Image (cartoon, rainbow, N blue to C red; front, top):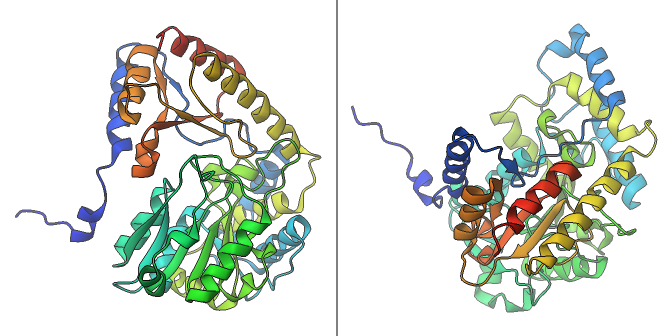
Length: 389
């Protein structure tokens, strides 16, 4: 029997990262010590007080059973308190907060709750690939908002044709931005909310990198905008803020109808976050280990300065990011994103991410991750410099 897969899988672009992973393994198998600056996975450990909290919680039999789909009320209260302390906005933890198995899960499931076949979804390009897959898996029609260096890697809502805006159901935004590291101010969200309310569009903001910032920059929330509660939902992750990528824990906060809709989907497709992890997440959200986040941001900042300075010395153009642990750099003349990535991997043993993997708008750029030690970063830079680009 010939196995037939769902046609929706054919809607996905070729998985460029799978080919690069294959090439990375091939280079490593040849004996090269590959330095990976590709994936955004913090190398800094989860703070010890959070780990200790998990150990204690894992011993409790009550946490060995199925968790609540929407999350422990104590977790949702901790998330709401953290959000109020950080952004100054109060939300009801019962009806306006939902626990997530990492923000990626919530981002992937949300279109199932709000997008019908034929609805247009406005997607930043370049952007996190899950925005696109969530759209097409639910029969949505993607409309890409091109982010360019000229426009500061932010979308121009006035460029959206009226007929597209009328059919649009959902708008994805992500600031601080992956992959470009672009940042915005609260006035940007004012414009976004006005655009969405005018056209009856749901605004979904992916705020995974809000706490990784430098030089005093404080990323705004979409809820800093007037009337955002009428149309918006925001996704937060503990992954980057607390170096908890493998723990898979986050939360969504916002409009109660949107939170309820997401919760209905989750009730039917998952079993919630392991309760011991939720208890550890409560510990994280409540603080209690000094300024560990500040310490980690200082480390990322040191790495950022090292990498940006070295890239500029090599003639690679890049901005100094105010947030995230990424550096978005232009490829040298004569290269595409993929050809430059392949040369750096094959000849220098350094893995970076081609911008085209995030959409057509990413062509001509590559993304460097700051998630290795300064020593390894220095070595990676020396290897790339030896290529004499």
